[in-house]
Length: 275
View 1 (cartoon, rainbow, N blue to C red):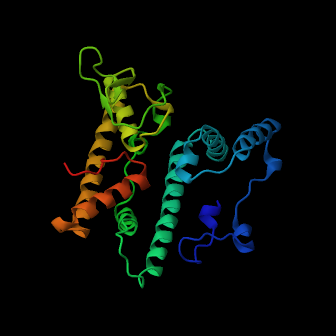
View 2: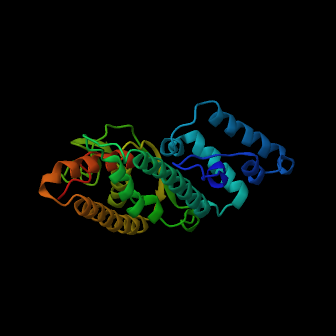
């Protein structure tokens, strides 16, 4: 809520919450909780509050934060809360990204009068992300969970090294998910394996539970839609790099900006390398 109602007028991405902003924050009346609801909320909140807060992308991946947010969204919106939860998560990510980009933009303005001798890829990377957004995520292309009719499967993605995920193609590993040359996991179908590969393409450090519909046709359609959006995003970003740095002599700078983009979005190195 502070991200939504906080004052952004300070410039450079600074977020202030003074008395006026705090007075606007909607607060749930605890007297409306049942005893069981109050106990559940306190237990879930204590898990989150007992550790330091993390950067937004890391924070939203934490199992304790996900459990707390899931409880809150279900309390506010009932059983049909999945679409609202996704919308809130996307909005939080976008707001945090916007403030980060404004911070970088503000630093760029302060340094305009300083003659630079070292190329800084950060402002260009920030501008490209502002213009073209973050990489598309598979979850945004899956149908709402309420349409899965209770037929879901939960895959447990093991911890793994940060390397490209692919589908196995030999007789021994066909349809499995591989990390490098090593088998990471089996799934109920090739469509579900493709979904894990799609997940790890944008979030290569992901490990934990990944819930999908049982219906492989539904999963396959979502992966196809994500794949098209993913290909378009990569092509658009590569084109933007060449537009900003068009000269052959700027090839190394394009690589530096690509590495900065990969770092900011959590992608693996060389994801944005030219085909």
